[in-house]
Image 1 (cartoon, rainbow, N blue to C red):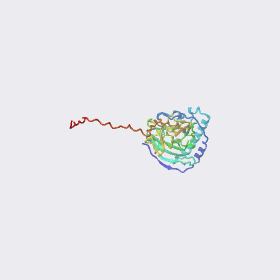
Image 2 (image 1 turned 60 degrees about the horizontal axis):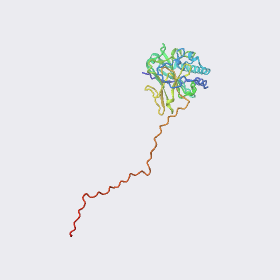
Image 3 (image 1 turned 60 degrees about the vertical axis):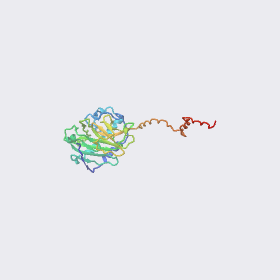
Image 4 (image 1 turned 90 degrees about the vertical axis):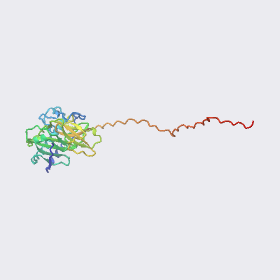
Length: 325
Protein backbone atom coordinates (compact mmCIF):
# COMPACT_ATOMS: atom_id res chain seq x y z
CA UNK A 1 0.00 0.00 0.00
CA UNK A 2 1.43 3.37 -1.02
CA UNK A 3 2.64 5.56 1.81
CA UNK A 4 1.18 9.05 2.37
CA UNK A 5 3.54 11.58 3.94
CA UNK A 6 2.95 14.97 5.49
CA UNK A 7 4.40 18.36 4.53
CA UNK A 8 6.64 20.54 6.70
CA UNK A 9 7.50 24.00 5.25
CA UNK A 10 11.06 25.28 5.59
CA UNK A 11 11.75 29.06 5.17
CA UNK A 12 15.23 29.28 3.56
CA UNK A 13 16.89 31.37 0.76
CA UNK A 14 15.84 31.12 -2.89
CA UNK A 15 18.65 32.83 -4.79
CA UNK A 16 20.59 29.83 -6.15
CA UNK A 17 17.64 28.33 -8.06
CA UNK A 18 16.87 31.70 -9.68
CA UNK A 19 20.50 32.16 -10.75
CA UNK A 20 20.64 28.68 -12.26
CA UNK A 21 17.44 29.24 -14.21
CA UNK A 22 18.80 32.51 -15.65
CA UNK A 23 21.80 30.60 -17.00
CA UNK A 24 19.51 28.34 -19.01
CA UNK A 25 17.76 31.03 -21.04
CA UNK A 26 19.21 30.60 -24.56
CA UNK A 27 17.20 28.33 -26.90
CA UNK A 28 18.95 25.12 -27.96
CA UNK A 29 17.08 22.53 -29.97
CA UNK A 30 17.79 18.92 -30.78
CA UNK A 31 15.96 16.10 -32.54
CA UNK A 32 13.36 14.01 -30.82
CA UNK A 33 14.50 10.42 -30.35
CA UNK A 34 11.09 9.10 -31.36
CA UNK A 35 8.82 11.63 -33.02
CA UNK A 36 5.56 9.71 -32.79
CA UNK A 37 3.64 8.76 -29.64
CA UNK A 38 5.06 5.55 -28.24
CA UNK A 39 3.23 2.29 -28.64
CA UNK A 40 5.74 0.24 -26.68
CA UNK A 41 4.72 -1.57 -23.53
CA UNK A 42 5.29 0.25 -20.29
CA UNK A 43 7.62 -2.48 -19.10
CA UNK A 44 10.30 -1.70 -21.68
CA UNK A 45 13.65 -0.54 -20.39
CA UNK A 46 15.25 2.85 -20.94
CA UNK A 47 18.67 1.59 -21.95
CA UNK A 48 19.54 4.69 -23.97
CA UNK A 49 18.82 6.81 -20.93
CA UNK A 50 21.19 5.02 -18.58
CA UNK A 51 24.65 6.51 -18.00
CA UNK A 52 27.65 4.27 -17.63
CA UNK A 53 27.68 4.68 -13.85
CA UNK A 54 24.20 3.19 -13.50
CA UNK A 55 22.11 6.35 -12.93
CA UNK A 56 18.81 6.99 -14.67
CA UNK A 57 16.91 9.90 -16.08
CA UNK A 58 18.01 13.41 -16.96
CA UNK A 59 19.65 13.94 -13.59
CA UNK A 60 22.50 11.75 -14.79
CA UNK A 61 23.67 14.41 -17.23
CA UNK A 62 27.15 14.48 -15.77
CA UNK A 63 27.91 10.83 -16.50
CA UNK A 64 30.15 9.84 -19.38
CA UNK A 65 28.89 7.03 -21.56
CA UNK A 66 27.95 5.95 -25.06
CA UNK A 67 24.97 8.30 -25.12
CA UNK A 68 27.34 11.30 -25.01
CA UNK A 69 29.68 10.20 -27.79
CA UNK A 70 27.75 11.51 -30.78
CA UNK A 71 26.44 14.80 -29.36
CA UNK A 72 26.65 17.95 -31.44
CA UNK A 73 28.28 21.11 -30.09
CA UNK A 74 24.89 22.55 -29.20
CA UNK A 75 23.88 19.39 -27.39
CA UNK A 76 27.18 19.38 -25.48
CA UNK A 77 26.44 22.95 -24.34
CA UNK A 78 22.91 21.94 -23.39
CA UNK A 79 24.26 19.00 -21.42
CA UNK A 80 26.71 21.18 -19.47
CA UNK A 81 23.91 23.61 -18.62
CA UNK A 82 21.74 20.71 -17.53
CA UNK A 83 24.59 19.42 -15.35
CA UNK A 84 24.97 22.88 -13.79
CA UNK A 85 21.23 22.99 -13.16
CA UNK A 86 21.27 19.65 -11.35
CA UNK A 87 24.38 20.57 -9.35
CA UNK A 88 22.65 23.71 -8.06
CA UNK A 89 19.43 21.80 -7.35
CA UNK A 90 21.30 19.09 -5.44
CA UNK A 91 23.34 21.63 -3.48
CA UNK A 92 20.17 23.38 -2.33
CA UNK A 93 18.24 20.17 -1.66
CA UNK A 94 20.99 18.32 0.20
CA UNK A 95 21.60 21.33 2.45
CA UNK A 96 18.07 20.80 3.83
CA UNK A 97 18.42 17.09 4.57
CA UNK A 98 19.46 17.89 8.15
CA UNK A 99 15.96 19.35 8.70
CA UNK A 100 14.22 16.18 7.51
CA UNK A 101 13.16 13.30 9.70
CA UNK A 102 12.30 9.91 8.27
CA UNK A 103 8.96 9.96 6.45
CA UNK A 104 8.50 13.76 6.61
CA UNK A 105 8.45 15.94 3.51
CA UNK A 106 10.47 19.18 3.66
CA UNK A 107 9.23 21.85 1.25
CA UNK A 108 12.15 23.86 -0.05
CA UNK A 109 11.85 27.63 -0.63
CA UNK A 110 9.91 28.38 -3.81
CA UNK A 111 10.99 30.90 -6.44
CA UNK A 112 7.95 33.03 -7.38
CA UNK A 113 9.71 34.50 -10.42
CA UNK A 114 10.16 31.07 -12.00
CA UNK A 115 7.30 29.12 -10.46
CA UNK A 116 9.56 26.17 -9.57
CA UNK A 117 9.10 24.09 -6.43
CA UNK A 118 11.15 21.33 -4.77
CA UNK A 119 10.42 18.89 -1.94
CA UNK A 120 12.59 16.24 -0.32
CA UNK A 121 12.16 13.43 2.17
CA UNK A 122 14.35 10.87 3.92
CA UNK A 123 12.81 7.40 3.65
CA UNK A 124 13.61 3.97 4.99
CA UNK A 125 14.89 2.00 1.99
CA UNK A 126 13.15 -1.28 2.79
CA UNK A 127 9.80 0.40 3.50
CA UNK A 128 10.05 2.52 0.36
CA UNK A 129 10.86 -0.50 -1.81
CA UNK A 130 8.11 -2.65 -0.32
CA UNK A 131 5.25 -0.11 -0.19
CA UNK A 132 6.09 2.37 -2.94
CA UNK A 133 4.90 5.94 -2.58
CA UNK A 134 2.18 8.28 -3.81
CA UNK A 135 3.15 11.94 -4.00
CA UNK A 136 1.55 14.69 -6.08
CA UNK A 137 1.73 13.66 -9.77
CA UNK A 138 3.70 10.47 -9.08
CA UNK A 139 2.53 7.00 -8.16
CA UNK A 140 5.24 4.40 -7.46
CA UNK A 141 3.66 0.98 -6.98
CA UNK A 142 4.65 -1.45 -4.22
CA UNK A 143 7.56 -3.76 -5.01
CA UNK A 144 10.27 -1.38 -6.25
CA UNK A 145 13.83 -2.31 -7.11
CA UNK A 146 16.06 0.15 -5.19
CA UNK A 147 19.71 -0.74 -6.00
CA UNK A 148 21.44 0.24 -2.76
CA UNK A 149 22.55 -1.46 0.43
CA UNK A 150 22.03 1.67 2.53
CA UNK A 151 19.20 1.75 5.05
CA UNK A 152 18.01 5.25 4.09
CA UNK A 153 17.51 7.13 0.83
CA UNK A 154 16.73 10.75 -0.06
CA UNK A 155 13.69 11.39 -2.27
CA UNK A 156 13.79 14.64 -4.30
CA UNK A 157 10.70 16.02 -6.09
CA UNK A 158 10.90 18.87 -8.64
CA UNK A 159 8.22 20.84 -10.48
CA UNK A 160 8.96 23.75 -12.79
CA UNK A 161 7.06 25.32 -15.72
CA UNK A 162 8.19 24.69 -19.27
CA UNK A 163 9.53 28.22 -19.82
CA UNK A 164 12.16 27.77 -17.08
CA UNK A 165 13.03 24.12 -17.71
CA UNK A 166 16.63 23.16 -18.53
CA UNK A 167 15.36 20.91 -21.34
CA UNK A 168 15.02 22.63 -24.70
CA UNK A 169 12.30 21.38 -27.05
CA UNK A 170 13.31 19.48 -30.18
CA UNK A 171 12.98 21.23 -33.50
CA UNK A 172 9.39 21.20 -34.72
CA UNK A 173 7.96 20.42 -31.26
CA UNK A 174 7.10 22.28 -28.10
CA UNK A 175 6.54 21.28 -24.50
CA UNK A 176 2.99 21.91 -23.37
CA UNK A 177 2.95 21.02 -19.66
CA UNK A 178 5.02 21.59 -16.56
CA UNK A 179 8.08 19.41 -15.94
CA UNK A 180 7.85 17.07 -12.97
CA UNK A 181 10.70 14.91 -11.72
CA UNK A 182 11.34 12.43 -8.93
CA UNK A 183 14.83 11.18 -8.04
CA UNK A 184 16.20 8.90 -5.31
CA UNK A 185 19.74 9.25 -3.87
CA UNK A 186 21.79 7.25 -1.34
CA UNK A 187 21.74 9.03 2.01
CA UNK A 188 25.52 8.76 2.36
CA UNK A 189 26.03 10.92 -0.76
CA UNK A 190 24.38 14.10 0.54
CA UNK A 191 27.75 15.60 1.49
CA UNK A 192 29.32 14.97 -1.92
CA UNK A 193 30.99 17.98 -3.54
CA UNK A 194 30.22 16.72 -7.06
CA UNK A 195 27.08 15.80 -8.94
CA UNK A 196 25.48 12.69 -7.44
CA UNK A 197 23.94 10.15 -9.77
CA UNK A 198 20.39 9.13 -8.81
CA UNK A 199 19.60 5.51 -8.13
CA UNK A 200 18.07 3.58 -11.03
CA UNK A 201 14.77 2.81 -9.28
CA UNK A 202 12.61 0.49 -11.39
CA UNK A 203 9.47 -1.59 -10.95
CA UNK A 204 9.77 -5.32 -10.33
CA UNK A 205 6.42 -6.02 -12.01
CA UNK A 206 6.33 -4.56 -15.52
CA UNK A 207 2.54 -4.86 -15.54
CA UNK A 208 2.38 -2.18 -12.83
CA UNK A 209 4.53 0.73 -14.09
CA UNK A 210 5.40 4.02 -12.47
CA UNK A 211 2.65 6.51 -13.31
CA UNK A 212 2.78 10.29 -13.70
CA UNK A 213 -0.48 12.25 -14.00
CA UNK A 214 -0.57 15.55 -15.90
CA UNK A 215 -3.61 17.68 -16.76
CA UNK A 216 -4.03 20.07 -19.71
CA UNK A 217 -6.81 22.25 -21.07
CA UNK A 218 -6.32 21.55 -24.79
CA UNK A 219 -8.35 21.71 -27.98
CA UNK A 220 -6.87 18.64 -29.68
CA UNK A 221 -6.14 16.18 -26.85
CA UNK A 222 -5.20 13.27 -29.15
CA UNK A 223 -2.01 14.98 -30.39
CA UNK A 224 -0.20 15.34 -27.04
CA UNK A 225 2.14 12.62 -25.80
CA UNK A 226 4.41 11.96 -22.83
CA UNK A 227 8.15 12.60 -22.99
CA UNK A 228 10.99 11.69 -20.65
CA UNK A 229 14.74 12.40 -20.98
CA UNK A 230 17.92 10.39 -21.31
CA UNK A 231 21.23 10.87 -19.51
CA UNK A 232 22.21 13.71 -21.87
CA UNK A 233 18.93 15.58 -21.43
CA UNK A 234 17.65 14.59 -24.87
CA UNK A 235 13.90 13.92 -25.17
CA UNK A 236 12.81 10.28 -25.45
CA UNK A 237 9.30 8.90 -25.79
CA UNK A 238 10.02 5.33 -26.89
CA UNK A 239 9.98 4.00 -23.31
CA UNK A 240 6.96 5.87 -21.96
CA UNK A 241 3.32 5.37 -22.92
CA UNK A 242 0.49 7.90 -22.90
CA UNK A 243 -3.06 7.26 -21.75
CA UNK A 244 -5.79 9.87 -21.75
CA UNK A 245 -7.86 8.03 -19.15
CA UNK A 246 -6.21 8.45 -15.73
CA UNK A 247 -5.53 5.25 -13.83
CA UNK A 248 -7.51 4.65 -10.61
CA UNK A 249 -4.53 4.93 -8.23
CA UNK A 250 -3.47 8.29 -9.69
CA UNK A 251 -3.32 10.97 -6.96
CA UNK A 252 -4.29 13.79 -9.34
CA UNK A 253 -7.95 14.72 -9.16
CA UNK A 254 -9.44 15.29 -12.64
CA UNK A 255 -10.11 18.98 -13.26
CA UNK A 256 -13.30 20.05 -14.99
CA UNK A 257 -12.68 21.14 -18.58
CA UNK A 258 -9.22 19.55 -18.87
CA UNK A 259 -7.79 16.38 -20.36
CA UNK A 260 -5.99 14.15 -17.86
CA UNK A 261 -2.96 12.25 -19.16
CA UNK A 262 -1.23 9.34 -17.45
CA UNK A 263 2.41 8.74 -18.41
CA UNK A 264 3.56 5.19 -17.66
CA UNK A 265 7.27 4.38 -17.39
CA UNK A 266 9.38 1.49 -16.06
CA UNK A 267 11.73 3.85 -14.18
CA UNK A 268 11.97 7.29 -12.60
CA UNK A 269 13.02 10.52 -14.27
CA UNK A 270 11.54 13.81 -15.42
CA UNK A 271 8.37 13.98 -17.49
CA UNK A 272 6.27 16.41 -19.50
CA UNK A 273 3.88 16.52 -22.48
CA UNK A 274 4.91 17.48 -26.02
CA UNK A 275 3.11 18.30 -29.26
CA UNK A 276 4.18 18.98 -32.84
CA UNK A 277 4.15 22.59 -34.02
CA UNK A 278 2.46 21.50 -37.24
CA UNK A 279 -1.29 22.12 -37.14
CA UNK A 280 -3.32 18.98 -36.56
CA UNK A 281 -5.10 17.61 -39.63
CA UNK A 282 -8.60 18.87 -40.21
CA UNK A 283 -11.38 16.40 -39.56
CA UNK A 284 -12.71 14.65 -42.67
CA UNK A 285 -15.86 16.27 -44.10
CA UNK A 286 -19.15 14.48 -43.53
CA UNK A 287 -20.58 12.47 -46.43
CA UNK A 288 -22.81 14.46 -48.82
CA UNK A 289 -26.48 14.48 -47.99
CA UNK A 290 -28.95 12.99 -50.50
CA UNK A 291 -30.73 15.55 -52.73
CA UNK A 292 -33.80 17.06 -51.17
CA UNK A 293 -37.01 16.13 -52.97
CA UNK A 294 -39.57 18.88 -52.64
CA UNK A 295 -43.29 18.24 -53.17
CA UNK A 296 -44.91 19.68 -56.30
CA UNK A 297 -46.74 22.95 -55.86
CA UNK A 298 -49.63 22.97 -56.09
CA UNK A 299 -49.73 19.35 -55.09
CA UNK A 300 -51.03 16.96 -57.68
CA UNK A 301 -54.68 16.08 -57.05
CA UNK A 302 -55.92 12.54 -57.43
CA UNK A 303 -58.01 11.91 -60.59
CA UNK A 304 -61.71 12.68 -60.27
CA UNK A 305 -63.78 9.54 -60.04
CA UNK A 306 -67.35 9.97 -61.43
CA UNK A 307 -70.17 7.85 -60.11
CA UNK A 308 -71.18 4.98 -62.43
CA UNK A 309 -74.30 5.47 -64.66
CA UNK A 310 -77.60 4.11 -63.30
CA UNK A 311 -78.31 0.54 -64.15
CA UNK A 312 -81.39 -0.30 -66.28
CA UNK A 313 -84.31 -1.83 -64.43
CA UNK A 314 -84.19 -5.51 -64.12
CA UNK A 315 -87.78 -6.08 -65.42
CA UNK A 316 -89.29 -3.84 -68.09
CA UNK A 317 -92.66 -2.31 -67.10
CA UNK A 318 -95.82 -4.04 -68.35
CA UNK A 319 -97.84 -2.21 -71.01
CA UNK A 320 -101.49 -1.73 -70.23
CA UNK A 321 -103.88 -2.96 -72.90
CA UNK A 322 -106.34 -0.44 -74.29
CA UNK A 323 -109.81 -0.70 -72.82
CA UNK A 324 -111.60 -0.23 -76.11
CA UNK A 325 -111.00 -1.80 -79.41
